[in-house]
Image (cartoon, rainbow, N blue to C red; front, side):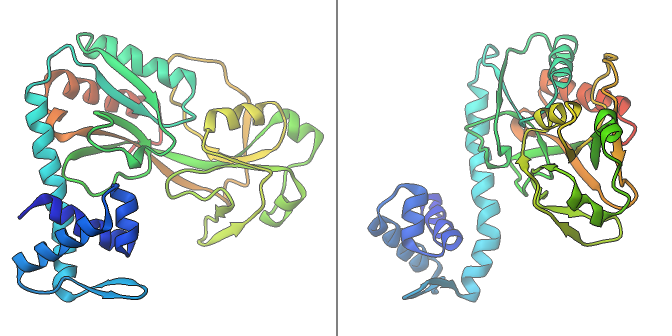
Amino acid sequence: MDLEELRAFLAVVETGSFLGASTQLGVPRGTLRRRVDTLEARVGVALVERGARGVTLTPAGRILTERGRTLLAEGAALMAAARDIGRGSSEPLRIVLPPGLPPAALTMVLLLHESAAPELALELSVRANPHDLTLDDADFVVHFGAWREDPAWVSHELVSVPLVILASRGYLDRRSAPRTAAELAEHPLAAWTGPGVDGRSWPLRDGGHLDLRPRLVTNDAHHLRAQVIAHRWLALLPDADLDPFGLADDGLVRVLEADIGGEVSLCATVRRTLAERPGTAKLMHVLRGTVATTSPTSC
């Protein structure tokens, strides 16, 4: 099977049309049509039904879609493995972090690197949506939320982080704390948003969500926490002690914890082709152990 034909077919399925696939892949529609036609000829049956509103899958197309994604990912992993064999030891380990980690957490990563694998050069970057990364973008990813199903990567949950409403003591001295979820509407609100978390829909402990209109929604939890410390508002955000170095307590108080809140996973994901390399494997092992020891909410 030609992987370019399969890639064209899957792009058409994911976008719902040849035009959408052309935009996604940067390939002319005519070329994509020929690739899908050739793939159908190889299979011997129609894979999609073409219509004025786009394409729909045939039963055979559904089967190929389910298995084709895995095949394409395995092909990408195989190519990456071949490239990794030729990678010199001087090549940096490309680590991608989510926005909003506190400086202490970044310091922790760097100190763990120095103790576990100082021979590895690092290249650190921050991405708003690490889940969109490909094998060409990163080697090691720290992210909120579960990783996508992809055999090219190995993922581990580091810790399950409480998602709670926080307020400063100064704010609560000026204004009484809300006693019920309904009273939140009387306060200025802010919220963190991330994979699987909608900052405008706050989770209720007994099930369901409370729809609100926060004045600020951001994916930067550290900036949001700083605004809460400055007594600006009540905020829903991840709250975990990821600082093993004894920084001072910022004095924030959890509000309505029995009524509103949830959990969000903080995970580390590494390319499968690098996962067993001594330096990378040791870094992952030490990171998992340190975060589990630091946070009482670890799995």
